[in-house]
Image (cartoon, rainbow, N blue to C red; front, side):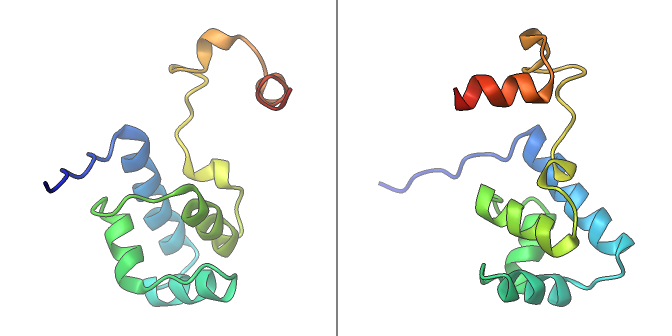
Length: 104
């Protein structure tokens, strides 16, 4: 039985748009960014990057971290700001508090 792909949600759509916007602001082509990712040890084709930017391919955490490194930004810059109006807001803590709670 074939499984249906999981739909890309709002956070994934935001990240896809952020990757493209930052790539363009840096003056990089998809080929160049994919080559930077590959040089960092995470092989990526421009086709995979294109599909990620168009939200046709899910971006896993390893891809996200590598793309951020290739763009010379923190991975969090590619994520939506949930603290203002999302799942993290009920926690009531800073990012350090959240990290401490997650890591123990």
